[in-house]
Image (cartoon, rainbow, N blue to C red; front, top):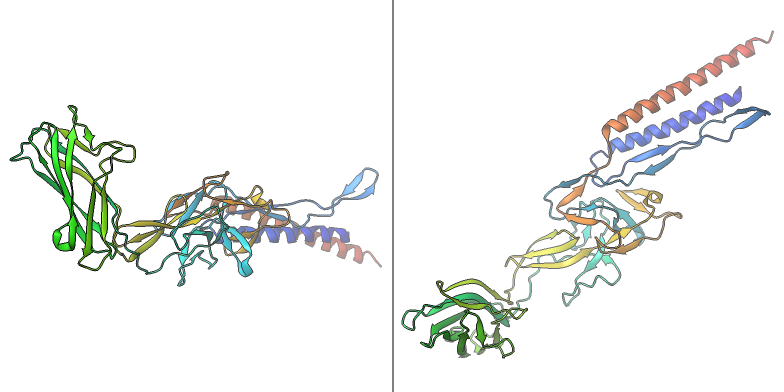
Length: 410
């Protein structure tokens, strides 16, 4: 009879654990990236009371397993929020440099510019080097983003204009000009003007391209002739010819001398100038220079790229999130803060770029919702409560039987 007490007590203990698990699941109903935990029960070794009689010894300590199913993706608009769609984990640095894993993507930047989780763990990945190179083949480390610094100006070395010249234009009325803003080594701007005039010879235009003479002691504009075929395609200068060069020496603002190449053809060798019977007009201008600019914001883009936006509208990739693929994630142990660590039965994590090697995608400005289902948890709560009540009744019944047995003694 005393064995019945221990059998019922084991059930009470197991039900108490199960109710605690349900309570924790419900407490994390709104925790981003949280994975609900299920309880698995198993009976204890039965004892034999005879050749054909076996009586169980109760229930063992329940096993808790996190279910790493996909949670709903919710757009937040938060610039540093990220959600994983598919398998994998963000990699973070825990206490004493221990490697931890998380699905929670509500990140933040600390005062030192280090990207962290909401609980303060540095997010692991790759940052750009001093020469602005992002090497994702090296080891992962803390991601450091720029904080309030100025970018170095980039002097313009190449420019292009995409335009059409009117095939019906005359020498007297057909002159066409367009301009693009370029930058010197100090980040000061200059207006580079392209002027084209019909020569009087069919399908031929003269051109001149240069910055104002007041900007430098010596300005050497690019000059020459553009020739088009009968279909309006540029044939001279040819793609194999040296492109026109605009130079300026002795810049009045103290900047380095400027040498700007005018690219008449794109990277595929297609001409960027045409001559059709339409109004002369510019469709696009490009140049590869930039002034110095202040950092406006830092955000996470799709694919896990860390993007810095500057006041000149320039966007620069300054980092990349790493992702870990683990074949048996249910073996991970929860260490709090929405983080997990590997256990002795966890397979080796494969760390790499999102979207590769079976790793899921990273969606910027979004978070993955908790996978806790309220209806399921309340149903489980009722079941465990009923089980607890039933086993408590077993204890009271056995206690009454014990008292009756004692009372049999005269």
